[in-house]
Amino acid sequence: MSKKVLLIGAGLTASLIANILKRVDKTLKIPLEIHIWEKSRGVGGRFSTSRNPNNSSCIADLGAQYLTRTVSNTLTKPYFDSLFEQGLIRKFPTSDIPSFKQSLVGEKENYVCTSGTGSVVKHFLTQTEVKNITFNRRVVSISVTEDGRVEVIPEGKSHSELFDFVISTIPVPQILQLENIDAILKKSDQDLKRKLSEVSYTSRYALGLFYNTQLIINPPEAAVNFVDDNPIVRYWTLEDEKRRLGDSNRPRDSNSAVVIHTSVTFGAENIDKELDNIKEVLLTEIKGKFKTLEGAQPDYVKCHKWRYSQVNQGYEGSPGFVVLSKSPLILAAGDGFVQSGFENCVLSAENTAQQLISTIN
Ligand SMILES: Cc1cc2nc3c(=O)[nH]c(=O)nc-3n(C[C@H](O)[C@H](O)[C@H](O)COP(=O)(O)OP(=O)(O)OC[C@H]3O[C@@H](n4cnc5c(N)ncnc54)[C@H](O)[C@@H]3O)c2cc1C
Image 1: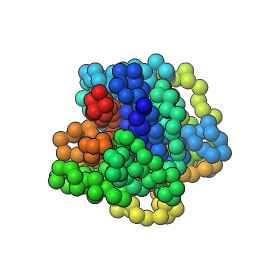
Image 2 (image 1 turned 180 degrees about the horizontal axis):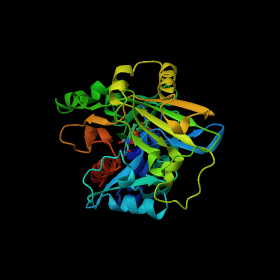
Image 3 (image 1 turned 120 degrees about the horizontal axis):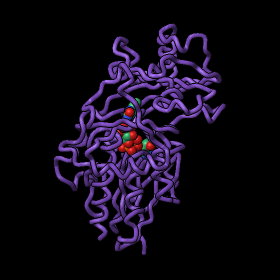
């Protein structure tokens, strides 16, 4: 008899956990049936790639921008190798980008995602062959039943389902917003709720401008910009040119896309504002400031609120995951339990999967 495990969320951490569980499948004493419930209509979470609805080949990364690798990190190497072999990542020549702050040059390498960051999550999920991914399913409640299983209720309450194990990968503040979570936490270490509530994230807005024309930038390295002298805009890229950096043989996309990220301060001060208002503020702010965009009219504009953008204060001790309930096993994973970024999500996924494997075996 197999056991049912639910991964809440279909972002990077969930895709990696599913990938690891699939790889060790045959060594498990009890086979696992993996399910994934995702609140949005696609995979990726903060590693997702947006498309112009009028032209699906015109893409933009509204969240994560590039992958940073610690050269000496043997844990993450196979993941980079796998992405590299599939042509999904390529060295990102960040030393050529004037505003890029190089940290630990030599010890760190950066990689750009050749088909957008969303393809990274898709890659790990495709290898996993998970059949049970359900989109547009937001979990609102988890509780423990009398016979020791986990009842998970999605929004709308029409598809409540029982699972043997549950792994949440949603941002930590959202765990604390789940109905019935207090009943689960009450049975755990007294400090758990306090430590969970101490985890915090920065907030940002992202603006995606999708064009029907090709925008040209010179030199190409000017396609990626960290902005130090603007209170609203912190970063902007010409997406198609970003993906060409370091590979001048790659043909230029005929339709350009631009991504703008706001500063952390602007995000914090405006996080509860209406998205349409922020969109107007950002469109006004960039007018006349970015030469590349002058005269070009976007075909489609998308403004996205990242209420939980990057981890500000991670969970105490960076354990990679925490046990919310020992029996039945309910785990919480994701960047909140380490820090943001690809390698930290790998660490979280590895530690989380290991905990589930040792419980089963
Ligand atoms: C603007 C920005 C720039 C960044 N830049 C970089 C970068 O350059 N490099 C880098 O490595 N990292 C970067 N990061 C951080 C990186 O994106 C995150 O560390 C990583 O994506 C976290 O993955 P995760 O799977 O833990 O969480 P998430 O990606 O948040 O995944 C959680 C998933 O759960 C879903 N979900 C939430 N609540 C529910 C619910 N109740 N029910 C069902 N599903 C739910 C969400 O929709 C989401 O898909 C950036 C992030 C942002 C926002």
